[in-house]
Amino acid sequence: MYVIYNPTHVRHDPPYEIYDGVRAPYAETAARAEAIIARLRQDSSYRITRPRHFPLAWRRRIHHPRYIRFLRERSGQLGEAEALNPSYFITDTYAPIVQHTYRVAGQAVDVALTAADKLLQGENPVYALCRPPGHHAEHLSMGGYCYFNNAAIAAEYLSKHGRVAVLDIDFHHGNGTQHSFYERSDVLYVSLHADPQVRYPYISGFEEEKGRGQGHGFTRNYPLRLGTTDAEYLGTLRNALRCIASFVPDYLIVSAGFDTYAHDPIGGFALTVPCYQAIGQAIAGLNIPTVAIQEGGYCVPALGDIAYAFLQGLQGKNL
Ligand code: Q9C
Ligand code: ZN
Image 1 (cartoon, helix red, strand yellow):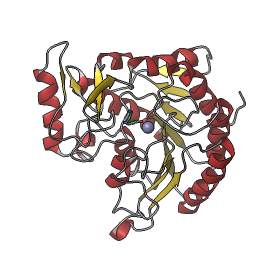
Image 2: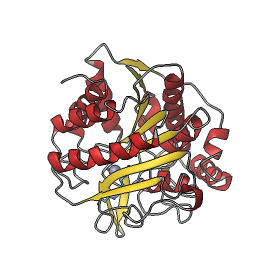
Image 3: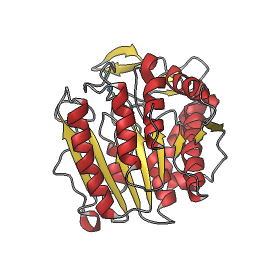
Image 4: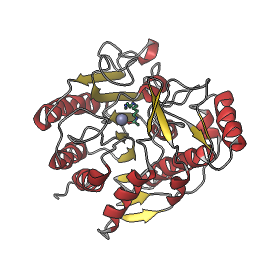
């Protein structure tokens, strides 16, 4: 299968995040994507390919021009070792800007769009190894390690060619993606995530959020308890997949976060490595052309094996 990857992501490397006013090491490190690509390189059936550049107009369909300009200008003003924690255009304290943030975040959009394009050319499944991730990025704000919403932009791109479902399996609710399509009936958003009552992003991902206006019924949230096991997760996933199947999408985007893993330093579920193969295989059972887009996942030593298990499953293969 095709893996779209751009090694220049390493230049977006903020030094710290802020939790309740206190500095902590930045969890969304370059080592994450490097661990995944190193594992995929061990299997020659993974065709690792650079992205091509897409017109900036695609970003503007999801993000406000003022927000994009802010990110571009503030990145450009920073020196090599500087980090800016902006006061505006941000929903939390988890998305500092460094010198190369605008460029690298834009390249992650190209990774997602190149993968979506491969899907249109008949490749299936396709994996976009995006970094930084995107699903917390909103129309007018960054947050949660996310700057541009790679999955939402890819969904918008594919929606010109058919009905699109987004399945978000990151540990955290994808607030930015949900809000991008909240009033639309041509893009379905379905998410499994930690109960937002007790985990980030706190402000969205509740079961009662179902879409608005024409979009009513086209958002579906499955909040799960902390400590969720493989069996519980796979049971809920089956319900989510039924919901997707009844929408009859032409394309499926999976916002693939691996912070549901038992030993993830930020997450709080109990999933094991083999469960990711089962998740991939269950998704493959839908038989819908699928692009997986990398979101979170912070247990760097396990990320290679988790991603490999998931992608093998997504191709209907065993470990
Ligand atoms: N003290 C993604 O997974 N909160 N973003 C961390 C740690 C921020 C996660 C709290 C979580 C953002 C893409
Ligand atoms: Zn996450």
